[in-house]
Figure 1 (tube, rainbow, N blue to C red):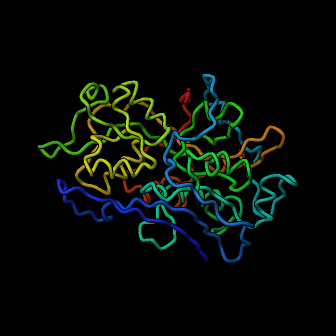
Figure 2: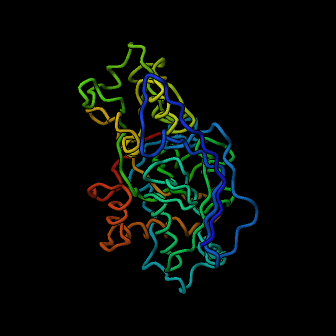
Figure 3: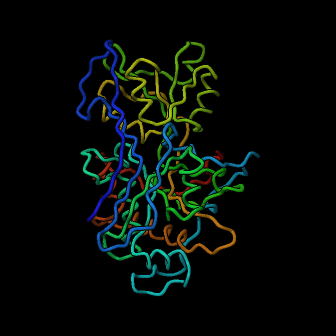
Length: 364
């Protein structure tokens, strides 16, 4: 396996008020500026890997190009595309000239990921081998196409960037799909820059993260309780989490950071008082810093993560239904490569109920 990785590491500067030692370093905020991982038997794609622009956001809810008009409510039917009949094996016929045909001829699937989401997509040992739940979901899609491991290449995507974000890279053909803790919303499936989504591969909730209380236990604060207190709550740039903070805690409470892990660094430096984002991301922050924890307040909203594929009204896209059916097979697989096993191995906790499409997706 050949791997190429260009990255830039931004170490956290801890304040004197909080002298902490952490197993994962002082939360080194990895800003990966390019990633390619392809099997040596596969041809490299032409051109260099995409280079995310510094200062742009990751994490969920930050995709540009959502329609300006209020999105139309959407439900299960919005992600219901499925392959008709059994999935084709690696030597079975697929539509000539289609997306699957192009991927097969290339020799590998190109998946957009990021390296900044602990437990989901990261490089903990700096060995140029990304790992995590998102990475393994992407590998499972490649395995479904080629019938064996190794036929995959990873490229960085940055959700808030108009050039290196998911829509831009999918629409240009720079990636085939993205697995990037991306919340399925009606706004993202509508409008001039719409994208296609699979059914959910993971369900999470938006919650609040704060330092442990003086008694060493999680605090009970809610977003509403922080309103008018002068406290700052950090969320990823351009995310719907920012909108929720403003709605429930007030405009002055919202503090936007380029990257999800930047929020943890800012919390450690006493520059913000809390972090509000998806529960999945907050679990990773807790794993890196034992002094912080999600509050005991109820979750605000369920966030369904989906695999993102390109939408082009002028072309038939056979990848979207293939991915959706491959994902359904993965979730039903009780074996070592099934969803349950990946969940347990990557997230290190008891397996949760299998994700299902909700009756109503979040609007935006």
